[in-house]
Length: 326
Image 1 (cartoon, rainbow, N blue to C red):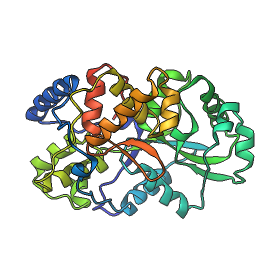
Image 2: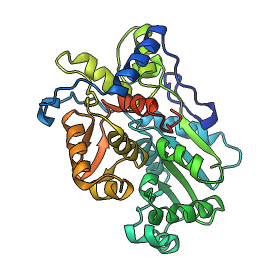
Image 3: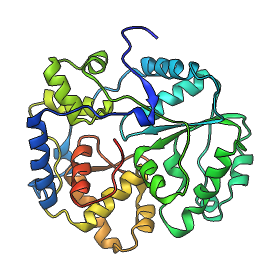
Image 4: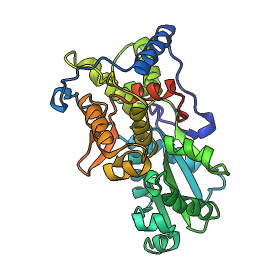
């Protein structure tokens, strides 16, 4: 790997978040207090008013090279490797390009019927491959009684090597949930090292070492989040979205569910949050959308926005939710 490439794929246990300056730590405390009480966003704001700047996606080539180097040094390649991916980090796109270069087939997600019946065999037989990439692990389960059996049946088969050689990209929030809900630990877990000032410069973010260290700390070392925050800094007419002042327990339920599943369709969100009446859920979703905290993509999936991610995480932390490790 070229000396100027600052991407690193590392064992998960070696991950360390960049430290924040003292002033940033004080700001984080104030933000958590503000989010606990709800923000001061304009009640009359509309999605059109929240036209945030588009942040430039980074070239994944150097990150793919980092994967190559890390795994080429393995003496005994395990049957299945796991890459833990924080939201917006780009890990999925990186591993898709790596898999394409190595002729790994991208696995299709199971149907709702297969989730309900835990039909791992029928799902696997339809794949017809020996080396594979599973890059949408959050789509292999829903946090309901009838939609978790599939992943519980799948994981032992993966670990026993019954499904051949593969790489699983696991969203960091899903991974944190599995750590608590599943009795075994996942082996051979990797992640990308936290962004450093040198890595931020590599993707063309400009600034002094002090400014870039502050940005890396604010983004918790997440490259995609850092790019979004930098885009906001460069657009003086835009401000980061804020949680509505009405944010409550229902808001927290929704935001946690969206992060836990890496986004959900409205009907699936109702399945995992049966305590919220449909009209209550609709009001919450529209209010969060109007404040730029969540968005509805072209496939009808609700997701948190990259611009609001850090505030959402702090909001959930202030309410005692089990967070990811990033």
